[in-house]
Amino acid sequence: MDDVLILGEVKEGSLDLKTLELLGAGKKLANDLGGEFSIVLMGDGVSGAADEAAPYGPARVYKLEDPLLKGFKADLWVASLEQACREVNPKILLMSHSFIGMELGPRLACRLNTRLTTDCIDLSIDPEDGLLLRTKPVSGGNAISVFKCTGEPQLATVRGKVFEPPEAVDGKGEIVEMAPQIDQSMIKAESLEIVKEEIVALDKADVVVSGGAGLGEEDGFELLEELREALSKSFGSVMIGCSRVAVDKGWISSDHQVGLTGTIISPDIYVAVGISGAIQHLVGMVHAKKIIAINTDLGCNMFKVADYGVVEDYEEIIPALVEKLEELS
Amino acid sequence: MKELRIIVCAKEIPDPEAPLSDVSVDTEKMEVNVDAPQVISPFDENALEAALRITEEMDAKITVLSMGKKVSDTVLRKSLAAGADELILLQDDAFGKLDSHSVAHVLSDAIKKIGEYDLVLTGRQAGDWDAGQVGLILGEMLGIPCINLAREIKVEDGNVLVKKNIPGGYEQVRARIPALVTVSNEVGELRYISRTKMMKMIKSRTFIPSWNNEDFVTAPEMLKNMEIQELSSPPDMSRNCQFLDGNTPEENADKLAAVFESLR
Image (tube, rainbow over all chains, first blue to last red; front, side, top):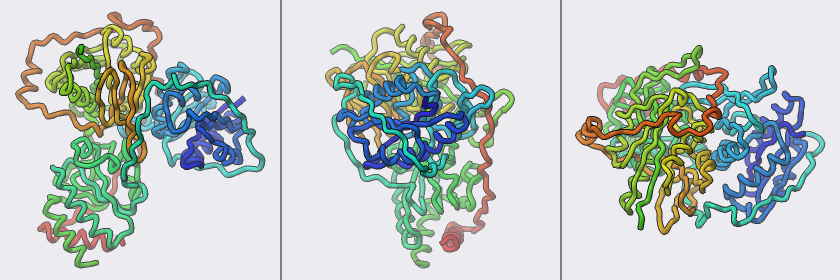
């Protein structure tokens, strides 16, 4: 009996870091239940990833391999995962809150007539009834809620960086092959083309200079770019970030977006320019080591979470700041 | 070609951009209290904008569905002012705290009552519970193709063509209509609505239909509320902000440059 099943994700042939974290979560919950945990992997070829997962302590590694499962085709993936759940019958199924988990979770929940909690930051077992307690930020992060739901499997998607990967153990999980019952006709949303874009890897930045609605216009990002360049001379990797509103206005592409539905980051320095600090944004940057806020509104949220505040019009202070930084460098 | 029928699901929520000082958590009643005006959830506004852009390309009719215990037609009339053709409110005491599955159940019954439709659009998630589930569950319940996280939506020859967000770029996806698409903010903000237009729509005597549980929900005994065990405030995020006290932007720029120097 697999009490806890986790859906693994494979990135460039190896297990994604989030999957290792899920293995940690699965192990913890299985311990609390006094049972076992297992992992399911799907794709066109997942043998390498299966071998990689086996030493982390799962009782079984289920492989669903089929040429049709190459790439993430949600229609086929949800059908295969539904099949795995019906065959394995786990009490709990965990997925990453990745673009895969975000899409499979709700659809699977509907098909299995069970309830899902998304983007969990903690999971535990209620000792009273053995059910899964799912802790999740709600209202953008203004509150933390603990849910308990009926239906099996108990489904949750899990935020990255909240669980630790487990230590490798002696002995290996048994590898179990499952034949996915899928065919081409099950594809309802057909992929025509995948377009790669040049994107910023905000989570790798040492310093992020971020702009929001307070910039007033798209051109504001040009000044931020000047500041970015000036800071690049003294700091490692400096990148441009933004708030959701800046993306909505079409000023900048969403790979720059910091926050709940953008990237969650913790750089050494975060410079917030013209960002009032909606809670959905704050949860994405509040773990920066130092926060510097430039805003004309003394009462805005951003100053409440900042280490340094400047109440100025960014159009006036940034050119002067760039000049000063150039002098110093 | 016959008129395309688009249904947009839009939720009314307290303004998610409210200052932190206007938000409090009632741990007893397990409610988040937000002292801010009600608005349409931002991603649902993006969904409405995506629908409006389709109407610019072809003959299409937009119906907005909004559901809750009590929905303010003043807030939702904004959708009509922006260009939607019809607004239907789904209101019932039973709709207040439903879980995502039950919300989708109610919406799917409302859509079945409407009957004909080609495209259902929802925001990727609502700004109150941030679940991000209703759209996709609704698509499953309706038994139609589902596409998640759209940044652009077009309709052509009986297909919906969607640019779907994926890590590192986008995927061009095609599905037969009717289909359900969840919309992300890359679509762009809801178009500007003049105050005159907005006031006119608020004051207009346009009849806004309101349906309750008995009007359309099949198997209402299946509806379940969210099972919240505990609601708490998040850890305090506040820091002690040191304000730079220069008298001119230049003075403050010097001080800020010194701050950066100290952080090197």
